Length: 507
Image (tube, rainbow, N blue to C red):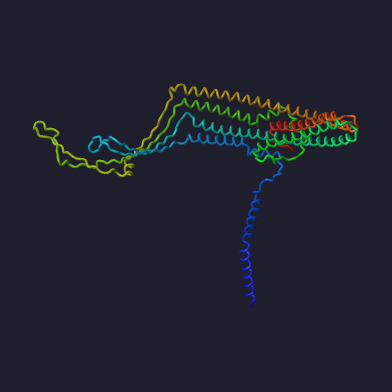
């Protein structure tokens, strides 16, 4: 056997073995294929988020801006404003309407052959097209289009304001979780300290060194600490739920944010004056942009209302046609019974004047298409309407529009006052929050020393458990107050920075 034959036999043998393997292991191959496709799909990004994901503030803000219900509602308002703009643009287009009707007349109808009324049924079909276009309408269409553009802009500003509010709410909820987390740590640490003191006092009571009343007081302290831990855990869970709802997350129990130690940092914005921040905010804040746009809309409404004083000129064109389905007279034939009838006599000769008598020849109606072509008609022209007296409707419409304009001007002034008050309030609150934080820090240092001294006195028997519990409670309250002052200051500084045009972020 030569080499090519040997090679051909080897290939044939390998093919037989491969087909046999595929037949016997079809399920295994299918499983491997499906597993590979599933793995590929996960690599492509279809795999769910990890349950232990830690959300950063920016991730929370961005997710809320995409999924929050209030933002979705403002997006729908933007869509409605866009639709209103299309309506305003459509006013410039001609109106075109087609009509068609088919009627049955049943009962007494005139017979076309005898001219007598008879009970019969006739049918008629008519069709037409009407076109109308506004040539002049007191510039109302132009003003409505400009007003629609302003409404679109106002909707965009309102959407931006809602997004700003959501960002601030998310930042506040985020910081609240951070506060509750650190407060929980404080409560757990104090519980650990109390449990160690409980063990120590229990040993001293067993040795007879201190009275049993001290152990009872410490047991009550440990129980109170456990309650404080449970309350802190519940508060943390509720704060997570609040933020998860802002983000439109369903599984809030596993939701968690990034654990970081956010330190107090000096903000360059706080070196500015409140007036400087207000002057910049007047140019950038959407609250004033919304109020200014609403005032422009009110001005445009006045122009629209004044357009009703002017005459209107419209052009029109109409095309109509019709068809009937009744028999028609197609000709005449002489009357065989009375071919002639006397209609008069010639004066002077007395000769009769005869008129031939004829009978109509009735035939089928013409084809419908031919009737539509033969019976078509056109009409076109101009229509001028001049308002003279309409129950003062035009005048009252203008007056109402002026009142709405005055309201918009007052709303703009009020918005400026509100923005000024909010900025000065936020700036003052941030300054006060910094002072409160510094005071809380000094108070904590003093309480820390007092608590350490209380532990030393308890260790040598110079203080009972009740007095130690009081010192510890003051120390825990000082820790909580420092945490509250810390995150309150961080948030209030972010509010001031936000008015100054700095996006929400926590480093």
